[in-house]
Image (cartoon, rainbow, N blue to C red; front, top):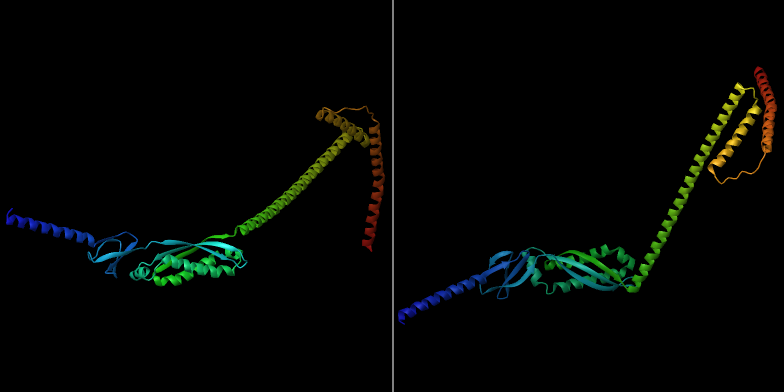
Length: 327
């Protein structure tokens, strides 16, 4: 191999080495960042910049990606055990929702000013829960859950803002008292609901009774009106029948009434046999009919005797009134 050939091979090797170094340097300088995240660039341990989503560059072999910070909302679940004002032990679970403010200063502070963010959040939640809940009874803790959430959020927001974080929500998602207390509360609720159910059932029964009584009263009222109308119709029919008999025959009133009575009597017997096949007719006589005739005749005689007296009293009253007017 000649010297010229060796020289050519050396030049090619150097060229390839340079190309390789350039390719490695190019890839080393590329920074590809995903959506909703940022990358923190350091140079020899010192912060030099932030790379946002997309493709960007850094100084190869010198700069490095030190941290990746998410800008998405995160959540920390904190479990706290405390005691209420009425000496009931409760276990509470609080969900803290947070995110990093999307500006360079806040992103830098969230990385370099806070060592362990979750531990800090838990400490603040413990402190707030154990200062608020002991002031309240168990019932007040349930009823004022929103107030507790607002107090936690307010304290956390004030304390965490300087580290670049924003507290979106602080939600009390579970309040779990001691098992014995929970069982007692369930019994109280069951007894209350049973009482309410009994009251509602009693009210419903009262309404049923009232409505039934009203319906019965209305039914009897209508039945009475119907019976009265029926009797009026019968009376009118009797009057027309008696008048027709008196005008078209030589029968007097007593004889006409007797005829109507006999007709009604046999009509009644016919209806009894027609609507009830189990009717048994016992031997009887017309003596009862004769007694009824005597009663009717006595009533007619009494009405005829009373009628002249009534007319005389009417005339006497009329005369007295006329004399008074003349005076």
